[in-house]
Length: 207
Image 1 (cartoon, rainbow, N blue to C red):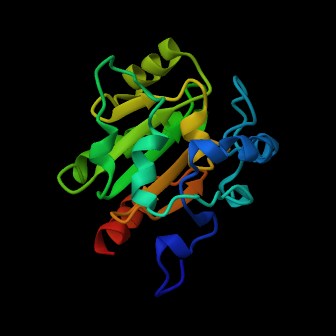
Image 2: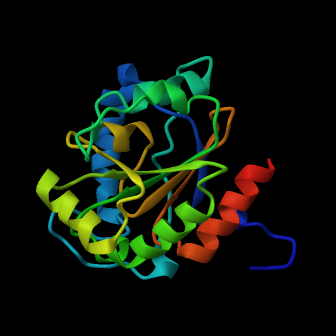
């Protein structure tokens, strides 16, 4: 990375706003078409990895119809299922810095990055929350992934119907959404790695 550049200057970062449920149907076709560009394969069970140089985040950055982006955040998680069977207060997310990590249980890139994500999440636990949003799989497979990779300390919200991924404009996995306390979002689709993840969190907290 050139001197003076930040992580967000790297290819693959897209600024966006949350998509409200009233607008999701309009995005469905675009999201489905973009799945072929997924960072870790194009559909359930496909574990083909795309080289880092080929990973981008383009064409599906939705624009919210809300006056307040932060108000849309709890709505985006309305259909999510806590993987641990507990409850989840989505309202508490509004107004806080947040990292949302999107992964699939069959994704080899996701599995490889998981321990690094867990380490970074623990390092910044007193400053922001990292939430995992697994999708494109069954609950049992998601739980096995959590157990196998040791990421149980990260709150996991299963997105069984794909609505959370769609709200954030996510079309591939892994993906990361960096949400600031004003509700502004930067989305990265592709493998990021622990060092780059930590650098981007530092930038998020400094804003």
